[in-house]
Image (cartoon, one colour):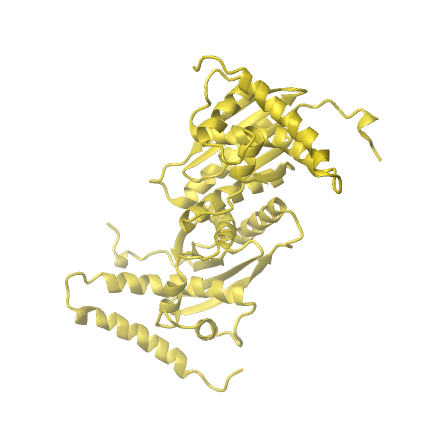
Length: 206
Length: 206
């Protein structure tokens, strides 16, 4: 009933990206205000491997809870692990992601999962991009002076960027069902133009 | 400094077994009082697959928390997944087990992991036992009229039994380091005698 002309409340749109892990859980919160975006918090929650696992998980849970309370995201973007050779890693990522999803549900924050390839596609423009390209692009899109560090934090920011830019673009791209391939190309071009513009800002490195 | 003669407080020893899963999480609480043991609670926490995953995990978290508050276990025994062909299953089991461990840590309850083979070895006497043998033995050891149902609950009770009987036995078996194989065999015989006694009680089924 409410169309886009209804004058939606001009609330800040804050997305919290989470790259789940028990030893190192990356997080990155991005606020979008119209066409601009800024990183408002990013870092890594780490738990010492020397501690018993239950204590580490409880500590991770509490830190995630405090983070959500502080950042008050309107959405969370959590990395989806589609394939993992190592079952131990899958279990561990599952334990951390389970806590992140639980904290999100309790705070009434919606969660979307993105695979690494979806993040690369949304942030750099192609799914085969390497980690460095993603991190460099995240720094440019968020006007950061340097590539965010550590890498887990950069990955989490990339997830948030993916949700902010990728999701609307994907919805637009998916919208013209039944139209010709040309129908979707304007969105593609628009996205490519945005990426090109960001890349054009590339001056001397560092 | 405190030896076994110090007169340890005669507290109830309650072990809560957890067979983690998001769709179905089995639990079984066993109280040991000297040589007797009784199941004080068992069942399954299930979450509807139609609900969003974050809500399901938050619900599982809250139910586990309520269960621990009610049962007040002195220890938790959680199934360890050593190998899982399906990474999706490993992720899902990881999410559920992560919540169980978090709840345990927050309630100051120690956690021990047991693999399915360790449970079979402790409960039936050999690691290649089938599920039915484990469930039948659990029913006998806990003096239940029937095999506990559903199977997830029986598996959780088996974990608790494994912790109550298996762990002390294993500690005894591990103790005589450097002794000959004969040194450990008395423990083995004692365990086998206990199993034989339980089996000897086998009358007409049902």
